[in-house]
Length: 235
Image (cartoon, rainbow, N blue to C red):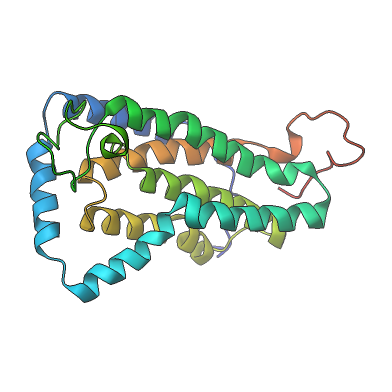
């Protein structure tokens, strides 16, 4: 068995359909009042077990899922490097697509479901469509941390493959696509940034978006003539 992944291209649609069904089912269950007690018990345990060393370690590790502060800047640097190397506008497409996808899905979903985070001090903080929370205090579901970590590490993987001119090894793939998801999931729930079900929903939605990005044949996307800048970028 080779230690290099055969392809980053995603083919089967079944995982996408299962993830979408899971996200829809979880959303309906929460809207009907299910799992709210479970979320509260997990959050209560987390807040009661935060010694300084563990807490600050979790705070640092949680930056692995910070889209605007960490992941997007790193993706921009890799995009710029690929753009400089290939002189192809296609190098920008994965970053642009990820930005648009997350902006049109995760953000609106947060606004629609109107759920407060565990740190909210008002009443009924576990419920969906919370009438007592508004603005930034009512954007917990689904977890943007988890959506970001799925989407932006997928973009990083796409860009790194193009820059290296080879597929990722299994360990490289694990380090980019699995380890950050697990670390951010645990730290996000532990720190009380999101309820457990918020993070599960973020994983399900983020998985669909990441797989969608991985399906796109970036070097074959139709583009107008751009004086050579439409050439393949090595994706």
